[in-house]
Amino acid sequence: MSYAKSIIDDIFGGIRPAARALDRSASTIQGWHEAGTIPQKHWNDIIEAAKAHDAYLTPQDFFESAAPAAASFGYGFKQPHCLSIDDFHRPDIETLLSLGDHYLDLGVQKNPDRSTLRGKTLINLFFENSTRTEKSFELAGKRLGADVISMQVATSSVKKGETLLDTAATLNAMNPDILVVRHGSSGAPALLAQKVGCSVVNAGDGMHAHPTQALLDALTLRRAFAAKGEDGQIDGRRIAICGDILHSRVARSNVKLLNRLGAEVRLIGPPTLLPTDVDRWGVEVFHDMEKGLDGCDVIMMLRLQLERMSGAFVPSKREYFHFYGLDRAKLAFAKDGAFVMHPGPMNRGVEISSDVADDPEVSLITQQVETGVAMRMGILHALSAAQDGASS
Ligand code: ASP
Image 1 (tube, rainbow, N blue to C red):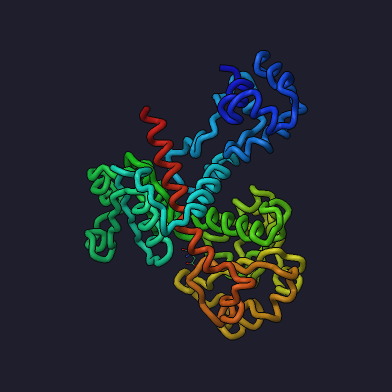
Image 2 (cartoon, rainbow, N blue to C red):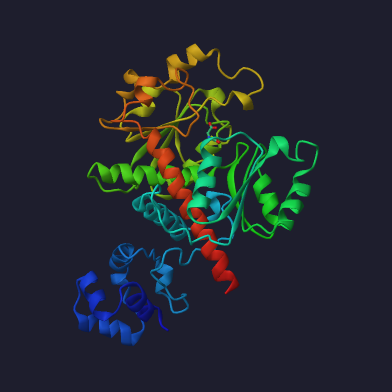
């Protein structure tokens, strides 16, 4: 089938619906259908209109050799793992965000459909403590019908000296479909992914990456902008990520994703808490909250990660709060109506004051947790669909 036919039939549902969606005459669309090609000047309109059908096309889809497009969720998502934002193309990201949106719309509490992951096994393997991430993967897996096991590393043989790779071999023998891993060392989930025969999700590795947090943050923002009656896009928004950037995997994944989605990303923090290679991150760097927050639509605060610090990175928590803690006075430097985010857990009175964190007018912190479950359902759904596609 030609790409033109597949776009017209599979995405828009035929010539007439495509004509309506694109505001063109049916005979024009029929011409494309018969020719099998679409003139380049129409590609952008088609890419835009296809989004309403949950299809995320790129210009590459308009070449003869392109795979047929389809409107179903998860289509085209062929990634075996979720290890880093770097592994995803824009259509992968849009598919994941759409799936997260879909589960948020369904209302995660009441979602009656537990068939998506029925018969599949998800193992949570957390070598570092977690409240939100581990529980949200557990809930997401259960809500989609998977059998979920959460390994308590403290009581497992990992504590008795078993190496990461021995653990991988043991878990692999249980034939899981998805392994969700958090580990204190950067690269551990990627190493496991090479050793096991299932999908691996990185739930945070050292200071390296936390891709599912970045995806849930992007989805939270899109929904928050849309709820304000604005266009729900991240493109062109000025977003400041503030605080302990050096030790933060959340910052690293968010910078990559937000840059990819077209945001203007700024980092604000003391020089001791900024990585030495920050000039290659594609961001503007500030050491002063007043200057850095100027005109910002969003302020993402980060936890001071004391457990990853050897030595003194800040003089005292009190002084840190004075210069970098977000309170009402510093919030006023940002745009009116700016949103505040924090991935949790929060150190109240160290990086953020309680009256800002708890103000529902500005704080999206509770929404981030709620969106986390839906976004992780979307990620599990996409990986499972990719597995089924690969085996069929
Ligand atoms: N929960 C996030 C993480 O796992 C942020 C933090 O711990 O500060 O990286």
